[in-house]
Length: 289
Ligand code: COA
Ligand code: MG
Picture (cartoon, rainbow, N blue to C red):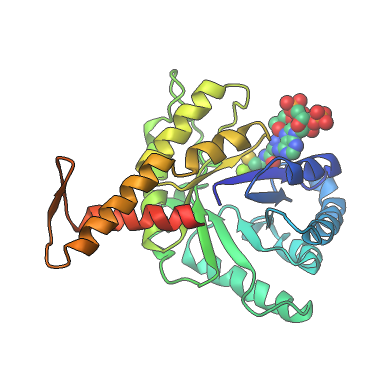
């Protein structure tokens, strides 16, 4: 997924609009964007939306962001929304691989109860929302084959830290959040999960948003979360490998195929060896998706 748009589950209008805006994935939200007293109704609305959206011939991936495992609400969320057969569940405030396994067991129970294929529901985690979660980042590797993506968050982390802000005056993340971002990137790649960049809350600032998308792509993130439909086309454009890069990657792969005995070759004045070949293959795999 290049783009994953949050749609609050207590808003039929936003869920419906989410389906039309070109997002690769919708994160139907039962957590922070839904007030406590609206959660019971939002669960039913999320389930009904999933049942409706799944019938469409062409649709985005459908994930539900449940409430955190320590909220006491996760089971109530899953009891309702799993009847809608989501493609995945986004786990907020995740503390590490143990939380993935805990959620995985809860999903297995509901998959059996609702006649869904065993293991079909994927998991994505927001992996940096508390100070303690930072120390769990090394534990995602091998946690579960359901784990499809890892993302990170600066909003809840700054609340946990009691920080004044998480951004510098120029809009860039302050050092503690850059560290969280970078560690989440390493954790995702180490775990074989997709690294997904965090949200950009200032949704009217298109220039700042684009800068952050480009920096994410440069460093290895392969998609970004959105909070507003206007952010989706920008993300999709930036995270679609450009034709020139695809052509260059094809040329690199071809050059190595034509020189099977060589570890290092020169192409248009550049030295290429194994990491360049690996990068080219990864880009082509992403382009195929
Ligand atoms: N998904 C789908 N539709 C959305 C949307 C979203 N995330 N955000 C806005 N829209 C819709 C609005 O409903 C509005 O529709 P309308 O033209 O039919 O009235 C249209 O897009 C334009 O919205 P706009 O007026 O620019 O913004 P807003 O003030 O209505 O909404 C937010 C601003 C931040 C409240 C809204 O974008 C939102 O709810 N975002 C998601 C928040 C969330 O889920 N947070 C948790 C993860 S961090
Ligand atoms: Mg939050």
